[in-house]
Amino acid sequence: MRALAPLFALLFAAACGAPQQPEQAARAEALNIEQPWAAPTPSGVDVSAGYLVINNPTANGDRLLGATSARADRVEVHEMTMNGAVMQMRRVENLTIAAGQSVTLAPGGMHLMFYGVAEPFAEGQSIPVQLTFEKAGAIDVTLPVRRTGPEGHSSH
Ligand SMILES: [Cu+2]
Image (cartoon, rainbow, N blue to C red; front, side, top):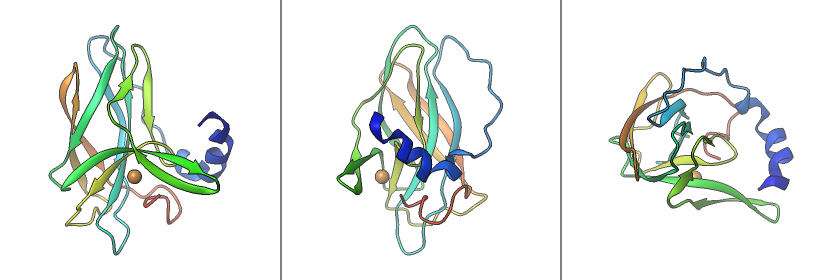
């Protein structure tokens, strides 16, 4: 993935330039979920994508085992990969967040993939998601729906 970073930086500069929320003081005893948001569902499909940063200030690594949402039949963690010139997605099982590290889900990289979205995500809505971690257990997070990049990014 490292060699692809410049390409992603170029392709997704607009989306990645989204305003950052002020840094919260990190609590050392728990995971922090930061900068959560979801893209509006593209017209004509029933899938959508969500993004966030998982910060692990604790002394122990943790793993994201899964995610669920009342707004989707199924939620998976995906990663963008390049197969030749073709961008593809693959599922990420048991995403590891090392002690003292952050993992970023952002356009062009990893993301939450919502399947079976009966009611399209629309700007201004809030999408409830429950993340399940091996050690931290269940963490509820709300993803505000907003449009941050040119058409097409939201559907990757
Ligand atoms: Cu995906």
